[in-house]
Length: 122
Length: 122
DNA sequence: CTAAAACCTGACGTTGACGTCAGAGGCAAG
DNA sequence: CTTGCCTCTGACGTCAACGTCAGGTTTTAG
Image 1: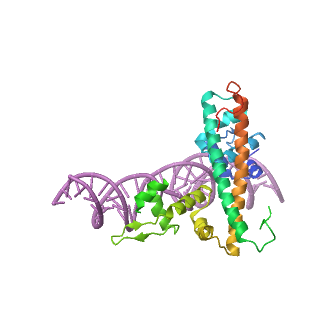
Image 2: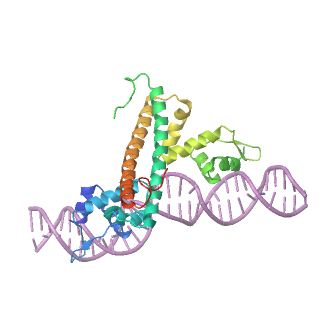
Image 3: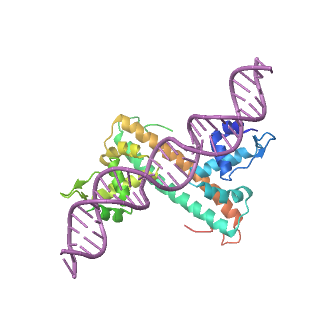
């Protein structure tokens, strides 16, 4: 598949995909004319990349962790890196939950005129 | 208290505090010579600002929500804004948890030589 | 065959939350 | 008084993950 197809399939921009390649996150085979060709399998990889980006990982961190995240085999050094990132994410989750609860408290106490508990269900 | 004291007390840079003032997130009384003076109460406020920043809110969003987050009274429009941010945070938490679980799976399966379950407790 | 659509490689622009530097003034201690 | 630290106001620098534009080639639809 070509880059535009991949982009629309994953919901990411063409520019982003080229950027991922720049960062060594994504490889591509080139057609004789120089156009990028991707196997269907990269869809998962791109989604994983997006997921890691949204978890606050940098390109540098992702490029280090991606191989072992996909294959599953990992060196001790990478294991430390994984644990570290896991810790970061965990801390991030707990502070986010605190913030959410704080907003929730405001919402529920300041909106008694609504239905009952949740002002905007789901 | 002066700006340097506040900075070290909260663990934020002096520059950041001045930036918050620029963004109307933080007010200060000036001494005759023009130096900023803060009451002790701002410590909580600055910590709250940091918390909202780390939750992914922009200065613009924070400046809108801060009054009602502190006072507790809120207009219907602000209520919508609060709910929207709450939703964002909620979604962010769930994707983060997914990512964390994914990393966990890798860590636990790739580290059977460690103690037993958790390779790095806490 | 031709025009539109997609692709290519640079390369500069954007945004937000600050960092950093310059140059000048304030403030307690010795 | 002066030494040293803190503070002030601009104002430019940074960094990451792209957006966007220019100028050119390639593929596809009719």
